[in-house]
Length: 205
Image 1 (cartoon, rainbow, N blue to C red):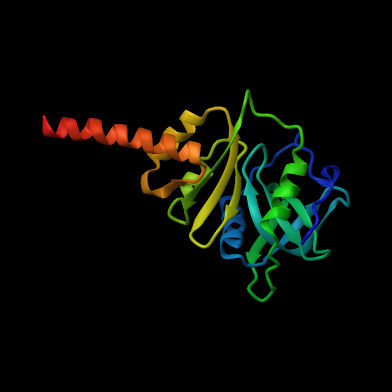
Image 2: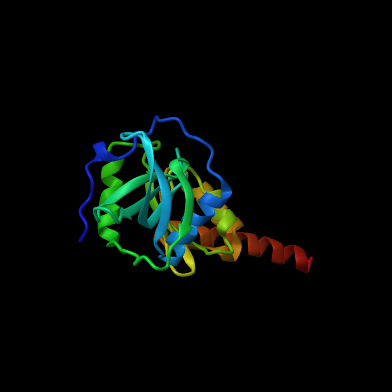
């Protein structure tokens, strides 16, 4: 199992963010979804230069800056990579993809953001969005969402105190979204059934 990296090795949250091209972001997302190695030119702040490297992308975070959790093929360790420092990215099927255990990724992510809170009494919510048909929905997720790519869906984990607002958002996505957390799923079903009942009554009147 891959071990997590100490939080002081993760990129600081207050660094300036540069624009990320849609081509670069799509390539990163596709690498994670297809579980294919990503070759990229990456700018290292510590060295002050660009270098070519291969990584295996496991998750993408969209806020506060777009980052990916990936295994670096140079040393086999999980690391954070800033998308705005990536240039010339492409999928490389010739380089073996290096999977990581979900538990190791979860430990790495939670350790990197230890002590960060998003309001009063946040609840951990999980749901999935169809991929790639729901790509636009993934890009419009609330801040703080953590993504895990599967074969045909994106697994989303987020801590929020706005449970009802999140449930209404998922109802609005229709068949693209599937709630997993029991409390969230029950609320989604309640809202969906209420909307169906009201609209059915109007159709019959």
